[in-house]
Image 1: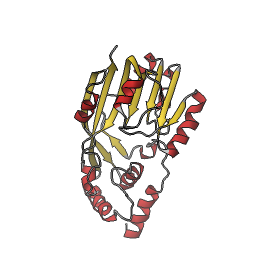
Image 2: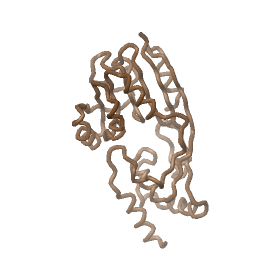
Image 3: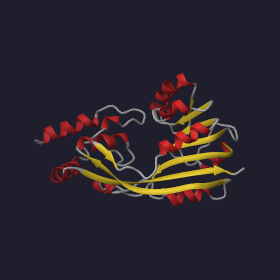
Image 4: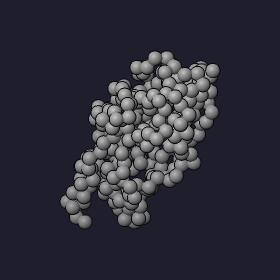
Length: 252
């Protein structure tokens, strides 16, 4: 493949639309090593036992709607990214879910009264742990899966530093200290993510822009060419990521 055709191939994947938190475009081309836990199974079990739940940083609502068959009587969600917010509101409205326009950060407050929910869910979204404890009812559950913020081999492949290297399991557990929350589960695990073609990597980096800030095909072409050579030599590109799971219960 000559350089012009190579760039056109990469741009074809870069320009594919991405919305919500839907990575189905990568099915079969981005293969994640199975985790030792299932956030989905834990969330489903918790929802089936809850009376009121909120999903923080719901994206386009696609993952929350996986659980519609076990929704409790009250379900709410938050999302701070405008395109995802509109998408989530459209998707969840038929189920009576209100999606609140709320930034997902470590410091922003949540627009809910004290002890509003007996379940707070959060998959891969930042959260203000004091606010989580405040809106959680006594005996209620907080379940979150997060991505470790330290530098990975994917960062190294593009010669960039991780933006949140402090964001580790210990960091999160320290945030929980002094709050009326009892940790029931705290795990971390590092697994492989395999890409079978470089176009999948390009799409992945466009969809998750904080991995390689300001990523474009043109500006990062030398790195992409190097990865293509590795792909041709090895048959796949393998990177690693560390995930964290915390389940906590508010003390009665």
